[in-house]
Image (cartoon, rainbow, N blue to C red; front, side, top):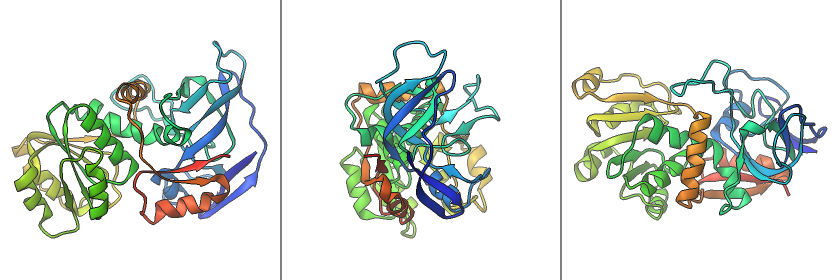
Length: 331
C-alpha cells in the first residue's frame, strides 16, 4: 500500500509498504480520506516529544472496514467508520492516564491506504458527511467539544470568544457554540477569515494584530463568559480583561509560547477559572459525534489533495492560508 512516511525531521516521502493485518480485537480499514492537524506539522519539523522514525503520520481518518481480527463481535465488515485518534484514555473522565497516546505517533497513522486499529476506536461515519468532511471531524471536533462543554461548561446564551478563527478546532468551537445557542465571537489576523466566520454564526470579530483591540472589542461586544484559546503567549492578559467575573479561560495549546507575565491578581480577585484541556475521553467522542448528528453539522474543509500530493497538503497548512481542515484523499 501507499503511505506518507516520515523518515526523519522534514523527510516526508510517499512510499510503498506492506498492507497491515488486523490483530485480535482489531479492524482493518481501507481509508478513503485523512485530515492534517498542526500536530502533524510539528512532528514533521521535529518539534514534538517522543519522535521516532520511520512513522506514518496522520491522526484523522475515515474509511470502510474490510477485515477484522479474532475475537471481534458483531458485523463490522463493510461498515463506514471514523476513527477516534485518542488511545488508552483510561477510567478517569477528569484527565487522561500516562499511557494515553494519539494516532500518528507513536502508532502509525492515517496518511496511508490502510490502517488497523482496535474496534473500540471506531464510530459510525455520520451519514450526512462526505468522506472529506468525515475525515476532518475526529481530532479537532473532539478537542473543541471537550473544551467547550466538558471543561468550560458552556451554556445557551453565554458569550464565548474563540481566538484564531480559521483553524479547524476553532471553527468546530464556533459551529458547536452557535448550534447550542451560545453567542460566539471570534478573533483573527485576517479580515477575510472573520467575514467567513460570520457566515458560520459568529456575531462579531476582532483583528488581534491591531493595537488596543481587546479594550475596543470588549466595550462593544464583551465581556465574555468563556474564552477559548490555543495560542497563549504575551496576549493572555488581554484575554483575561475580556472575561466576566467568575468566567472561564479554556485552553488547549500554546502556539505563541508560554505567557511571559500573567496578572495573577486579575485571576483571584475576579475569580476566573483557568481550564487546561487535551483531546477527550471516549465518552466525549461519543457525545461529540452525537452532537454533530443531531445538529447536522458539516466540518469546514479548506482544501483537498490526493495522497501523491501530500507534501502540498503540508505546505498549505504550514503557510496558514487555510480556512478549515486540509484533507488528503486516498483515491
